[in-house]
Length: 223
Length: 270
Ligand SMILES: Nc1ncnc2c1ncn2[C@@H]1O[C@H](COP(=O)(O)OP(=O)(O)OP(=O)(O)O)[C@@H](O)[C@H]1O
Ligand SMILES: [Mg+2]
Figure 1 (cartoon, each protein chain N blue to C red):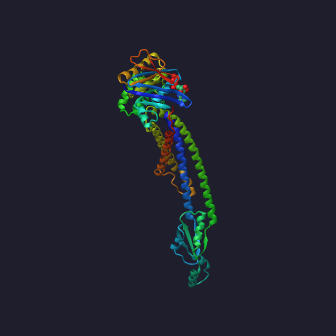
Figure 2 (cartoon, chains in turn purple, orange):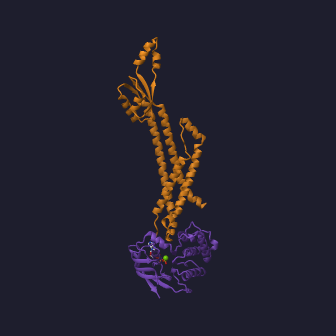
Figure 3 (tube, protein in one colour):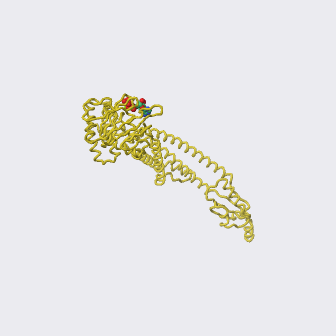
């Protein structure tokens, strides 16, 4: 099976005196569903940052979508990022844009047709139950609502890879289920590879998944 | 409301730069007009033993624009106490010739010295009256005025530059978040900064339009026109075409420079 991510002897750090991820080897198959768990501060978000190329490998190699991220050029990285959908732990919504425009962002960047864009955004707003909030600005929404906007944005351009950093961290059971359904749907219907950082793996999931646990800078697969 | 506030700070900074620039231009034009005024009133008088042709005198120095022979009739009239016409004709021949030289522009003191030297090289010219003392005082006054205006314009320029740089910091802060987020979804640099460039273009156009209105008003103000009349010069205060194009050009250049500095200074956070 094709690999979307191949990490070899991968080390990550923000400064030379502290290594967050230490010589990790792992791979993620195309179309798979992956959970990443670990204590707070263990390096889960850091690992995701390296996958979308915001943090370059300190050592070893990291290949995402066939692109070696060590020393990757800006244009190649941009190209790769246009095919990834990210739900950030802190959402990272554009404050001066409406919810609708925020969700459109990846579609605009990918140069989608205006009609396609509008249809897609309408569908997603319905899916995350935010149709009535479309014209509002991020700071006028609750934390959980912002999180659902971030989810909709990550899905909007049908990416080949979704990275979601605690996408249900701020949600009640009902809204959490909504998110899991969306991620499951993308994975099973569109064959999107999904990587989710979470503290609780939902029990109701209908897909096979892989589970990595990060501890002391090591990434271990849990069976 | 929020969007107006977004624009206001840069528009004001740009407008104050445009304003001080146009004022400096007006002062510069006034000084030039005043100098021309002085030049037309200023002339050098020379005394020669012999008739000198216009062309000979014009060739002495390129500054000389016009030669006028001063008629000796006035002098002779005063001497004329019953001389017959034959003697008068003879006297006319022996009297030295007087010429008034008009100059192309208002000369500097050094130019006057050079001119005098050049004129005296001609062995027939015995005396050059350059009215140097009066000239010197006027010229120094003019230099002083120009100096004061330059210092004034320079200080305005420094203050507005500081203002712009403060603005730049605020802008950098305001736009960097959106630019980072767009970058995380793979937007190329031109797309990330498109909003910024569009905003600064709009602000440049708005501020030059405001400057246009302001100076059109000033240029038609009766009171201001009277002041210039009083000094005795006429100056184009604001040319709605060439001055506007220049102001627009400066505003656009500045705001694009500003936006480019922000884009170049933008770093992706980790
Ligand atoms: N931008 C940064 N600069 C320097 N150090 C950082 C930065 N971001 C994170 N760290 C450090 O890296 C370590 C791992 O952080 P990370 O955000 O990956 O943890 P996490 O597993 O996502 O935790 P949480 O579950 O709380 O989100 C932490 O010790 C943190 O202090
Ligand atoms: Mg985290």
